[in-house]
Length: 411
Image (tube, rainbow, N blue to C red; front, side):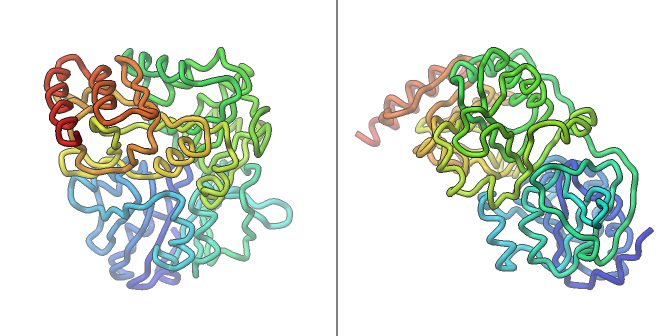
């Protein structure tokens, strides 16, 4: 196993790649050796590494832009520091040194004949952070596919490498429920041929993608993509033919899916780009056909969105939601928030949200299994009525009363 004590010092601030590109063997080496190194801090995005939850050493503190994947358990245990930030701001925060730039840990493809490696399926914030980071440590995984558009990194940039031949981490498979499929049908009814879509990964985005097979010339410009994208490319629904920029290409920063999806990436028209491109306002403003599709923990009766906190605990993050919602509403086609109408015994449409992730001015439609609330051009009273109409029926009377009080307050 690699000796990290030669490269990481006490007090260092570290970042590493996320999700399917997480350099797990090197992260585990850090967990094993940090007691000899001394106290360090680390920034990471989405993690599927359960060992972080079970065995977080006292000398390692973790921060993130969200409580995503296994980091949710750390959040609930009070062991995760949240940096509430728009994804588009990450490149500048690395450039300024506000986010960690002492040591970066990446997973890359095997080098080509000229000694250059690809960031593969995990470009996102990593490509922007590398240029500002003092020490780069790399897991060279022979199963990481070299991808199109990803910045290439020469072997000479790495202070140390660990060679592996292991399967990439696959995204957890959660089949959409009937409720999520109903939401997917409502969202699909808002999508027009030629639209350029941004959406996340998981059961609800999968349900949306499953409903789009009858559409034509769809484009994709999104922070992350999953298996459903490949299926729509195969069916001809996704062609990118009408995209205003990157015509014919699916543009993303990361792939989170199955082994079969990862294997197919080199043959698909997918371009992997850094967050400084995928999420920047300058880029998004050129996509007049942009439709953002995001989820939420709760939405209040005025349309404000909370995608971060439930019952006082971080369970999500801002991510790219505000970036894409703002662009889709202001310069693109439409901004959509899709969610179940209830979470356990609680309504997800509420009189007031605990945290505002996305402004009500940047939300065009809210969708639940009970229908679609079109908020465009609506006053506060009208918004409350339309959102109450798509709430779970068990909560509508209470929301009607709250909506009436809201209208009286702003009369």
